Image 1 (spheres, rainbow, N blue to C red):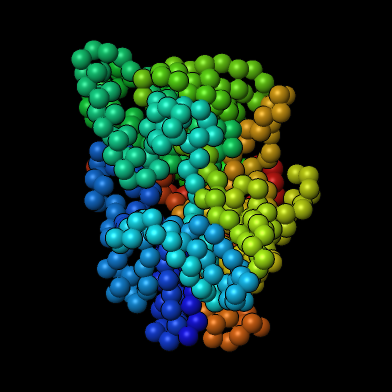
Image 2: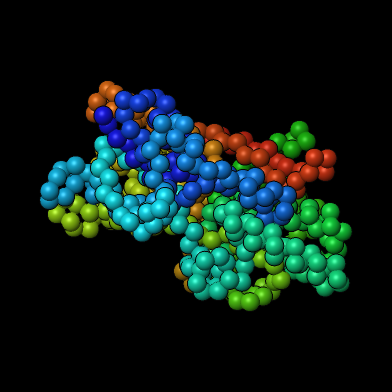
Length: 445
């Protein structure tokens, strides 16, 4: 019997585990290690954040799902990997620390034949002093990154709406909270859902709304932009976004790195090197992402984290990390199998894999501050990659080390997204976007 351990139970991890369990059957063991007791459909947190869904609408218990699927479930977080085993055994293992199931704080070493890192990101609020939830450096903004965060965001939004109804004008500032953030799309959806809700509440005329982002142009979305068909015409996402923001009365400040957040205001630096401040009454800023902090050790117990993981904490895979200058970047730099180059029984999926470089053009201010979106790896691409990795591991277990590895390059895959601009059966709006490929072959937009 072979054991596959999947670290993480988000879109990529859940997809990997469920397909692998289906294809491997009861002859082999699939284990999911995730610190969460519930699964969260994160895209719908946007609607929780404006009161159009509840936390219960976007989450479900993991234990019964995995029990039904024949998957071993460990409510725990992965702490470290020993891909060579240790002095006592050559069998690789992962050390986990329980966060639930009545074993909180206990650790366990779990041996594996294959491991898939699908831990997703660490929400790195601490990268910007004073930013949002759980930063320990202040809590002046809200977040929609988790279901609980979104519940809090809705509570604060309700307070702002009540103030407007009482005649107190409010300023809303939504976007990214650092110069190297991704997930501009989530903030994009949130600002327009708020604008929609303010209209429904009859207080839109009491609100000033502003977008702040690290994008060099509106509609970059971390992909260097895209093209869309609107009303029978093909337009760039830049024109689409600028038109939508103007139509909805939303101002914008782009090419911005948020340096610090304080009560009711933030400080920023722009791509031209200038600095300024923005005041707000309500703000939701997406934090930057980092790897979750997994460590790796060799057989002798020496730290080999830098061998297995990139400096940002994401796992190295079959990508070209030595592409050099922007002019040398190619579609072929992007990974195809998501297999770790040092340890062939290790894979990464979804946000957990380290991209070879940006997709958007790298930019920095004259002060040397990087201000550019990092590559999105969420949603549909995460699911596609998770399924491909499950295929590969299944083949390796059933056919041996020379089995064919399945491929899912972001330079060749398409992805679909429905971006909500306001929820409602008769008055809601959305943009359905299909991108092919996710990573364009040409860098320039």
